[in-house]
Every structure is written in C-alpha cells, then in structure tokens.
View 1 (spheres, helix red, strand yellow):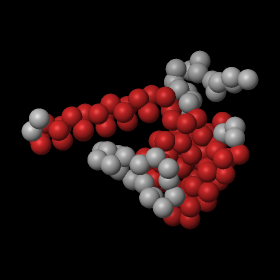
View 2 (tube, one colour; view 1 turned 90 degrees about the vertical axis):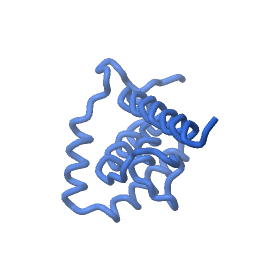
View 3 (cartoon, rainbow, N blue to C red; view 1 turned 120 degrees about the horizontal axis):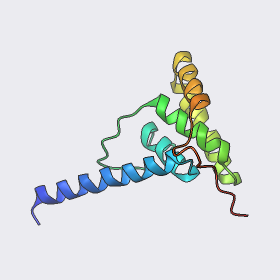
View 4 (cartoon, rainbow, N blue to C red; view 1 turned 180 degrees about the vertical axis):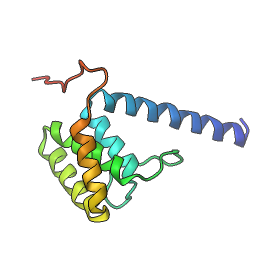
Amino acid sequence: MTNITNIILVSLKNIMTLELWRKAANANHPKAQFAMGDLYYQNESVIFVHCVGCTVQKDLVQAYVWYKLSEKSARYDAEKSYVEKVLKAITAEMSKEQIEASNKAVAQWQPSPKDCKPRNWW
C-alpha cells in the first residue's frame, strides 16, 4: 500500500467512526455523548477520547452541549466526576455568551429519532 493510500484509508476510517459516534450521541447514548464532547473540546490534559487526524475543529459550545447531555444520563461515580471535571475546565474557557448559547442548545435538544430514551439495563 502506498503512503497516500494509507492516509486516505485512515481519513475514511476517522470520518466513518465520527459519524457512528455522532449517530449514537444523537440517539442519546451517554458514552457517545462523552466522546463527542471530548472530540469537540480537544484539551489533551483533560479529555479521555483523542482522535488523531480527525477533521473536528475545537468548538467549546458543542463540547459543552455534549458534556451537559451526558451529565444527565451519567450513572456511575466515575462518569459523574469526569463530566464535573471537564465542565469545570471548559466553562473556565468560555464566555458568558457561549455558556448561555450552550444552555439554550441543551434545553432545546431532542434525541433522534424521537423515540430514543436513555437505556436502563437494570
């Protein structure tokens, strides 16, 4: 395989992976929402999910929205403390207007499709 072919395959894999994460996050899957928050935040010292070569641009508003959504469905102490830590770090970087826009987006967010609800396995 040539170097350019390898680069193209890695790029396609990243795009497909990102679309699957986004689809799961939009369907209200908590771990996918954490991942989307990480991908949009891109603060290497704080986040867990890293995507080398992804086309996602840092977006504090989108990151905040995904973290707030994942906070609603966090079940375990580790998930709750992770979101708390990241939200504290991200809000320190955001303007008042960005936080207001983010909170408005969280309030208006609906899972897609609409019948998706957080799963309760137990």
